[in-house]
Length: 345
Ligand code: ADP
Ligand code: MG
Image (cartoon, rainbow, N blue to C red; front, side, top):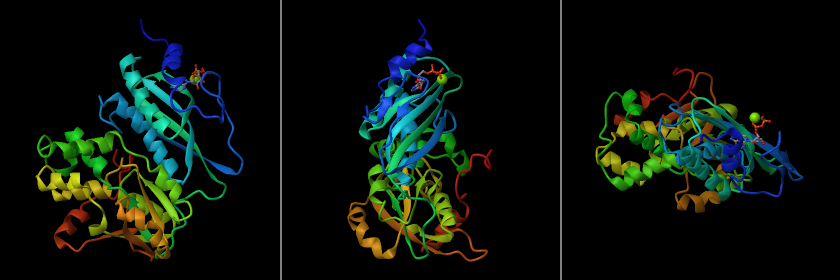
């Protein structure tokens, strides 16, 4: 018997995620009743995943559920906030119980880990699309913004950007068509390939780092459309220009291994690292005198200093990527700065 809308909501979404004391009324009424604590600003974010656009058709439901929440938590992290509540607008071609069970598990495991309650949503029939909103708190007046960086501030990034884009390229060979060549996606180290695919399918939102940055970073952005392009947005909002040193942008051992093994070429790796999105990493700026506060994170490889903000001069470009290797210049010059859904349409 096909699952009705009411039963579907009741079975899969009533109890999804963590149960928080500040949810006065959750799923089941016309609206949720939520009680934010005193002394906070409420941060609201929204991100939608569309099948075939943001994840490959036929992607594992568990990964779709995880990513739909993770990309929103990444925006919350970039504001320096702690997540609390979420809404889920789900459009499904059919009520497939196995798919729904796995989707909800992917969503809920991440929601439980960060104490996010699912407090409502909407369910309708149509092409597979997952819209999520998350609400979080930050001490009043302290939220991180893209604006606030100053000339001289160090530009930092968490993790190893580009891994998710490399993972997606391994999952969908079509993603490589734009690179003008095919690559050997079934070759190379299995462990490295699995690691990169996992960075796309199950990214880790940097919520702990985001809250640590509250009294340290001058500006912050979530890297969702590519490192260089997103740093350009931060620089623009801060009224500065950015200089990045290519040799300081960290590369994961998995990506490096697959380049060595000829699965990817060097230019693929650079494209993933500078223009790939989907990593859920944070890019942020800190004043040079605060660098010591990063040293533990730097030592553990959780954060890398990759450049600096400079004065914006008329006519100069927003982001300059420098390299000591002249043979890489041609690859850099060929890169689109960041992915824009409409300019690429
Ligand atoms: P209405 O018709 O008043 O919008 P619905 O029947 O759509 O109500 O939803 C009933 C309840 O179930 C509401 O509390 C709504 O927030 C919740 N809900 C519906 N779909 C979802 C979903 N995908 N995830 C979480 N909660 C949902
Ligand atoms: Mg409704």
